[in-house]
Every structure is written in structure tokens, then in C-alpha cells.
Image (cartoon, rainbow, N blue to C red):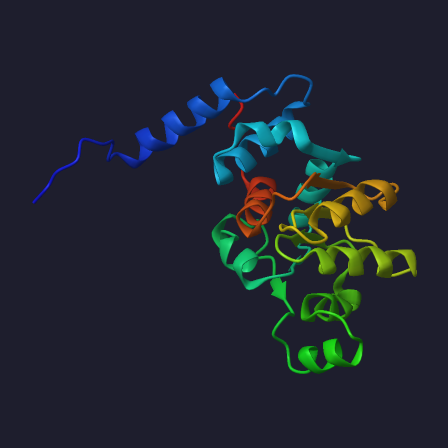
Length: 213
């Protein structure tokens, strides 16, 4: 049996990981709560340079933590985001809701000549008020959310916008930056993103410890 020389102690891996992140990531200028969230995002993707491309609106960390503490649901665009949320960390056994595979969503998408992800967002409206929204896959989901808000849909507490890809991802996140108004949000400009980042953002809001200290 081949034995590789590597660290096996999970606590030591954790400690060294966050030490490396703090050493390699420029957190200058970020408020402590934003820095804590940024650290978690870097930990999720292994890329310290993303911090320079994070865009913030309002006080997303405070708004998200308050919403979770009040029992707000977490609305997600993809099952991968839902599966990445650490349920025991949620303070009020908050519901994590993904409507992508609900009955009729595919039919609605065909009827509306849109994606299933966008059609699934239409099913959020009765749960949007005060919710934590985490989008980690589909640019069309973020675009649709912004359209609904512009039409007067209830406002979520915070939007964690991390759609990924080559078509529409950068544009959808820029639309969030440009049209969020007073809605708290955090997003990653450009093509990068993904379900792991969206889930990490939710987990960071629910985390009790501040890993920047």
C-alpha cells in the first residue's frame, strides 16, 4: 500500500487552510463581517483573487444573519446549492427551498419560452418576503428575480448572487449591481461563481464564528 505524506488531522487542515487564506487574501478595506464572508467564499473555491471582484450592496451580512435568526427560508435556484447548505448550522431549522423540479415547471418554461430556472423563480413569490435568496447556477434565475422585483414582488432580505457561466452570468450579476437599489446583496462580478459559492455564502451567514480573527 502506498502511503503519501500529507496532513490527516482535520482540525489542523482547517486551521492551516484559514491561515493560508488570511495570508494570501487582500481583505483591506472590508468591514469585519464582509471580510468573514469573503474568507468563506475563498475557502469554497480556493481563489483569493475573487475578493477584488466581489460587489456589495447595503449590509448583506447583517441582513442575512437577521433573516435566518428570524426563521426566514432560503430560496435556491439549484439542488446543488440546497445540498451544500449545512442544515445543522441554520439557527431556526430554516427551510431550504428549491422549486426547479416542482411539477409543472418544465411546462411553464416551454409555455414562456424560457428556462426551467427562470420559471422556477416564479414559484418563489409567496415566500420571497424577507427570504435569503442564493443563486449559484442560472443567470436566467437572477434575471427573472430582478424582473419580478421590478414588477413589485415582495423583497427578500438579501440576495447572494453567484450564477456561473459564459452566457449571461456576468450580465446578470451586473444587472443585480445596477438595479438592486436598497436591496442588500453580494455578488461576484464576471463569469465565475457556482453552487459551492452560493452555498458557502449561506453557511457563512449562519456561522457562529468569525474566521478573520
